[in-house]
Picture 1 (cartoon, rainbow, N blue to C red):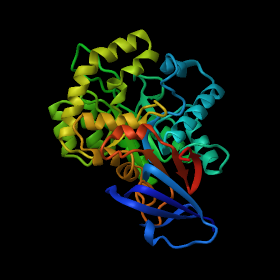
Picture 2 (cartoon, one colour; picture 1 turned 180 degrees about the horizontal axis):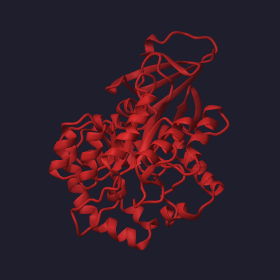
Picture 3 (cartoon, one colour; picture 1 turned 45 degrees about the vertical axis):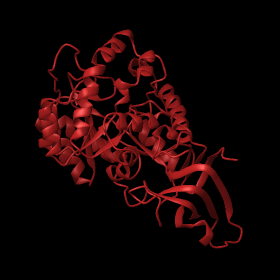
Picture 4 (cartoon, rainbow, N blue to C red; picture 1 turned 90 degrees about the vertical axis):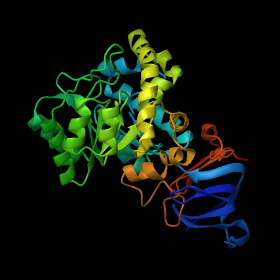
Length: 391
């Protein structure tokens, strides 16, 4: 079995990302064998030794909300979903996978796609035929027949939800995804429409539970949030229009929130939206910022995702800190806590003995400046070096 030894100035160890200086990470095959002080590192014949100077070694990042067939750097990328072919969307997905992996994302949670592209690419990545983050696939998302957006498939009634849920499960998805509310609220209103009933939501949760899987819901607040909590949804995505009542409900629930703050807080994303959508985002930005700050202040468990801004997950960590999070918890939102939400907390998301060797190095110390995450010279996935610019 091949050994690799990473000698690093600083290593963030365990689920709590405890910093330790001048450590050696010993990798056997695709697994972390030991993490020891460099002066105690054993001599292992034929081991490949890599010195990562002036860097911090940490777990590979986990993107908790993306869409493979959407690339937010492409003009009017949402509208493209309406007319693009499976082949065209697959090419977009392949490019996004490369961007994500090279930016330090070693695992990604794909929150709904067309044509089961995420399920297909998950299998190809696992077989080593395609390069990219390991994927958790949601398959075909489910929305109301009068619902918003281009990703989810329209449904009317619990039985239609059951049918698609079972089709997803047969295809081999890792979770189910519901689209409950619009994504961008009306700038002139506090009302949040809800497009799936409690009965429809509960049906999806029950079908997922039969396979031991979870349900995530696109929801920005309102009645839809109450129904998601009452229906047993485990992860609430976005929550852009969180009211004090919504925050109280979430704080009292067992839900995790997946913050995708950059959709509104990152002005560079406006450049590729349609003029109408860009205007709505701009008008909503101050309100969304305050609502997300409110939600962050409750201390609710959270993870982070970009919602298809491939290669820019590091910005979400910065936005979490800007909204009031401490740095360690923000980093956990793309590492150990993210792994837990993915159901993989015992194998990825932490640097510790027997965990999968998904490891990155960043220039500088992210515990002092999260912007360090933008500079990733080294990426290892499953013990295999896929990027090394640290020489």
